[in-house]
Structure formats: structure tokens, C-alpha cells
Length: 375
Image: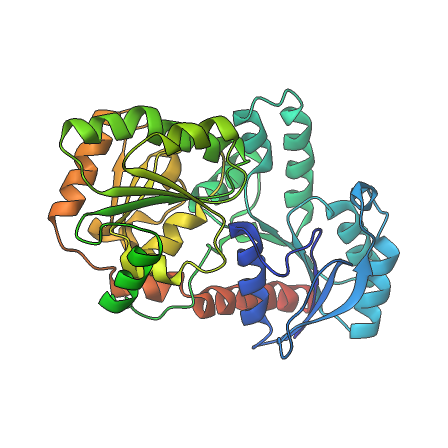
């Protein structure tokens, strides 16, 4: 199978969950099909990747204009003899839809969020226009792959899709089983960051110039941390990510047990050191990839309901403790409970959330639609 994938923004090197999702999807798709990429000019592809760029989209917001890149898609698909088109996000759906009609091949969408509801939660008054656009795009596509089961069911009901137009393709992991903790790496991490290795280590990470993540940091500082102190908490809470506003940085600096780390290139040592990832998010749509990443690395998670949206709970077990939004007393009790028990990520999690399984399922579904069209 030859696939042309349209990616509307820079994703290499990946520096957030959404871009990691795109990179990993195509790294694994490229092992099992000819995956050609039509993407923006400012990507840096590492040697020996199983995909390659066949055409480039101009930078700048004008690239999202309807039908602007239809000719580029048509040309690249013709040259690559593509059997199908895959559109990452629905934003370029008009261009992809028209090119697919001209080529007489099926096209698909990979939806990272229901964007309309995400922008509604952020207070954007124009979200109904985006809802109408997304509904049109998903109805026109042969099928859409949704990161969360909730999004898939939302699209089935609200966009009036057929059952064979929706599929679940979650954010995944390359790990096959729960990794073992390395005590030496924990010691090194704690020494480098001046952390007491004998006490619990909690962390939150994300792009901190994104309001839902900034709000989560505020919840940690002003709601969770004071309650933990009341229960004699002596551990460390790490805030990881770039872009935190100076006011919150100053508040953290004055707090004995909270540390703002900023952006880090590698989280591998953190995963050997951390006990719990805390995720007190209240807004923002789609799956929180930081939760999947933590659980994959055998780290326990305490999350609000919002922060656990999109997680297939049946595959997680006790590794994930979910607390009602805004119930900070219970959130802190869940942290204390998690610190008192020993758990490990289950084999079911890795069999379902492994990138190989996810992308093989995506290919199988695309081939089914291709066979239906040819039939």
C-alpha cells in the first residue's frame, strides 16, 4: 500500500505530545507501507527514517486556505502512485478532499482532538464555525481515526457518521513491557537536581505557556501543595516544561518543596526517579499524552477527570487514580494512597497502546476501505 500523508505544521524534531504522536505514527506506518509525507518546509528529518518527504507546503498561515495545496497533493500522490491520502488534523480537509476526488482514491483523517469542543472550553466564541467545518470534513472522509474513544463516540453521534467511519487510534508507546527502575539513575538525577532521594518525587509536565497547563500548575501551587503540607509532605514536586510565567516561577521559588525545572531534553532519568505524575488539569480537550507516557514508564498517576479524558481505563488498573474535578481534598488523599501501595503497569496496557498494534490496525482499516472502493 502506498500512502500520502499530509501534515500541516512542523513536527520534527518533536517537542510536544501531538508532534510525538505524529512522528511515532509515521515511524511505524512506514515499516509496513510506503508512507510519503507532504509537510511544511521547516522539518528536520533524521537519517534512516522509514518515511520521506515528497513535497513541501509553504510556511505561513495562508497554507490553511481551502484548496490552496490541492495541486501539490495531486502532484505528490500521482508521482508516488498513492493508493490513499491521510490528513493529520482536519484543517486541510478541503484541499485533501478535492485532491482525493480528482485522484479517485479514498482519504482519511487522524483527529487529535475534537477541536471545536477544545476551543469552546477555552472560551472562543467562534467554536460553532469550527464544529460545522469539522462535521463536514469527517463526513466527507472515508474514515477518521480518533485519539480517544470519547471523541470517536462524539463524532458518531454529533457528526452523524456511520459506524465504519470511526476508529480508535490512541497515543501510544514503543515500550513492550514495564521498565525496571534503575536506582543508580535515580541517584544521579536527584544529585544533579539537589533532590532528597529518600523522599517522594512527584511531577507535572507540559507546555506551560498553554493556558490549561498553566492552570494545572496554579492548582498544584495553591490547592494541592498546601494540603500536602498539612499532611507532613516532605517530598519534591517538579514542574517541568517551558514558558511558565514569571509570577508563578517566583511563587515556586519561595516554596520549599516545589521546583521549577523548565524544559528538559530527555525525561529518561526522571522516569527512573519519579514516584507519581500528578495531573490536575481542568480544561483542554483530547487525551493528555503525558498520562500515557507516565503509565508506559511504570509511573503511577493521580489525575482529575478532565486530565484522564480519553484513557481506556480498563487497560490501566490501579496505576491511574482518577479524582473528580476540583475535589482537591480527595486528590491529595489519592496521592497519599498511591505512595503507600506498590503497583505496576499491566501487560494489557502495552498490548493495546503499543505503536505497532495501533498502526497495524490503522493500515488494516484503510485497506478495508480501499478494497470496498475498488470492489
